[in-house]
Image 1 (cartoon, rainbow, N blue to C red):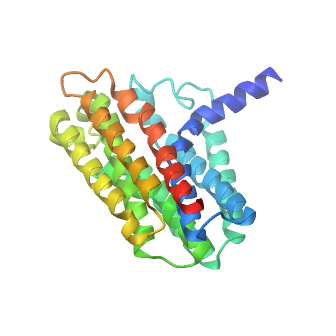
Image 2: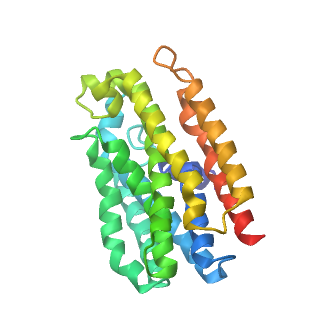
Length: 287
């Protein structure tokens, strides 16, 4: 029993299950908007299954693709595959299982979802290799994660609107921004090992400025979202105001000369942002 619990814990750590908080609230936000109110249990259930499958499958594959890099990086050498806690073959099987979950969910949603699913899977797996050849890897990660609200909208409505694209853009810019902040801690390793990132390409100072710019654009679109969805009103805008304050604080606690708060800035604070935005939006939609 103890070994089973340990294995489950290792698998959960492998896919960073707790980081689901960065994507799932945006998927639910899109679900509520696409449904025009409280979604059906059918859609809520299958969107949740799709998110579990897509996100964990993508993260598991990312660990498979990066295990050699992780093994040589002092910061990541104790991750599950390099440390031998999870075998590479096990991670591949986990990836396959997760994408089967995604396929099952897609079959129970709009027919367009199943048609587009292969492209989505290819794209989210493709991200894992981008740091090998382009510093735009953060933007590609943002676009990959933003498939959550975009895919949710398509799976429920079977179409695509400007509003759905704007919501996905918020998600993409936000994720890309905090991923750049996170990448600053690997600046030396990335430059020494030809790993591409915005900090490695442009320097930590410029990288943080780019992250601020991306988050500024995300906030602008957040405030403009009621134009596309008039149901979003005072509660949502109050939530966006709080999100803006959190992002300002996030950028204040990290600077090129002091990266000690990078984990708090890139992860801890952002774990509040997506649920806050969803709950504020859902409140306006339902009240």
